[in-house]
Amino acid sequence: MINILELTEICGRLGCKFSTNCSLSEHTTFKIGGNCSFLIEINSANSAAELVKYLRANEIKYAILGKGSNIIASDSGYDGVILHFGKEFSNISVYNTKVYADAGASLAAVCRKAQENGLSGMENLYGIPGSVGGGLYMNAGAYGSEMKDVVISAEYIDEEGNISSISVRDMMLSYRHSLFSERNCIITSVVFELTSSDSEKINQDMAECMHKRITKQPLEYPSAGSTFKRPEGSYASLLIEQCGLKGMSVGGAEVSTKHSGFVINKGGATCKDVLELCRRVKEIVLEKTGYSLELEPIILE
Image 1: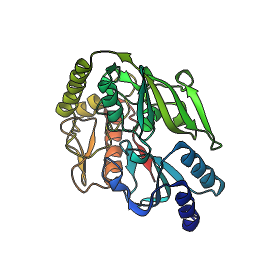
Image 2: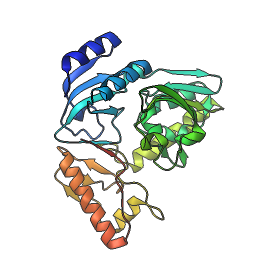
Image 3: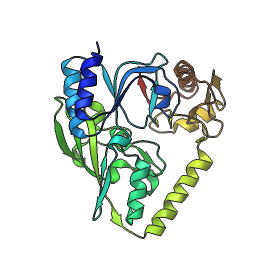
């Protein structure tokens, strides 16, 4: 049970902004989801650690939210506390070939900062609509590059609510997986190691990457990005297309006709619509190809 008065007092002491009964549809790229009981804007690692200790000690349900780009939020909302890692915790700095970023910074902003400083290595990650913390949590990647290729270390809040540091070699980074996704840990900052290069060339490569996204992906519609993980031995989009499922819809949710790996919100889609469409896609693909598809986005409920 959330003690609104206590949480309000804690947020005030920590200098964290907060809101009550706010719509998750405004905090997710899918633009769906009901209201959450209490949303706190995280402003530092220490604030996050103190809040986590309080929430765990009082057995209050909570979840972490960054850019909301890999989330399918429940229609009934979230009856708990959302710790939002956003613009209040999004500092980025550069020292030599290293880029230091708070978890709430967007990957796109880090890519731009690197380009401005003539640092190469993140060009293919440009355009991924997620935060630094969320990107590392799932080892985000695109066009042959992944977070694990450029990250060297991170700070995180461990199971006890303490701030710890970790080297990339201990993060267990693999396809859409990390140590953080296995344990109840929260990433607070990330350090990237890049290489010096020509700033204009980096800018051109980033522009080419974005052009690929715009021409091949349905960015004109709300979505959670790639809807299914890549099954071993094939590609989700290929299997879905082979099964003739492009354009298949349930309510306002549709398998994109532009890229079959995306389920999109054509207008007025609900979480129920999305999950039912995904269920049907998985069922048909399994029946026709023998491949079992797994959802990539996290369901927030």
